[in-house]
Length: 444
Image (cartoon, rainbow, N blue to C red; front, side):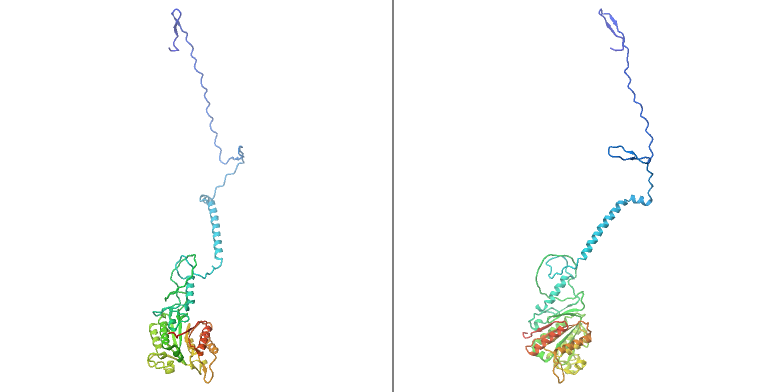
């Protein structure tokens, strides 16, 4: 039934009873919210500022600030590239650099490293021009007289022991005085200790820091660029050496000469009462000169077809050639003012003064006795006076600052003359800072 339609019904009698219509009451209207107010106008920038207060408190009105002045081009670029961070980075790096320089300076001024007297038992690095190699070479030189090595070719090393015979001891070792170790470089340190000795042979030439070459004759080693051999060829030498010793001496002297490098200079002086000079000036060790030196030595001690005794000068004077056409230069006492009018055998003094004129760097003097230098009709000169005379001539002819090593070799003779000769030769080598060795040829 529609509520708005007129009501109808039935009464008690069943008659319809008219219904009275109810008035329509509309629902109350909902209140409408007023529109929001318009937003306030924006406040101009940098006009006012709030002063920040403590947490929980509202800020107070601040003092009005003036507008900031715009940055210049440099400051704008500086801010753009982060100049502040760059400055801090530069300061930090500068501090690290200063610290590194202080460490380097402290290390470099800590003084030289401790010197060692042993060869490292291990370590990295290629062998080269190092202190260890120099130590090895020095050890080899210092121990040379205690080694005994047979020579099979010219220029091979053979260093005899102190009691060996002439044939055992006579060898040559010629190496460049400018030699160095195996080329290379390397760095490294290794721990370890070890001892040991070894023997070996070898000859070589190479760059280094010493001029000339190194030669070892009859166990005595010397370095230089002009070596002169002064050989006693007197009658007593022929007796003391005997035939086998003469052969050995001639053979070993040939090895020395054949082993010389082409850059070397050499000469030979054979002496008795006077002397023979191989060449008037020291010559370069070419093969031609080596061959001539071999022929020059063959005639001494009665060898070859020579018809002279002790020296060619004794037989032929100043002729300059013997019966075989072998050339020589005569050395006589009248050629030296201090020795003019003297005589005697084994004239070591005469031979050495003649050698000084050729400006040698090393002399090897081989004899079996002391010189018997004396003036005619007088006693022999004192041996110390002869050494003084020789040294004075050296200073006068070569200069007081010149360096000359004189190595002397005495042929053993169980006689007073032999003992005096050994003593004289030992003193003579000591005067020049050289070395001396005595050889016993009786076991040849």
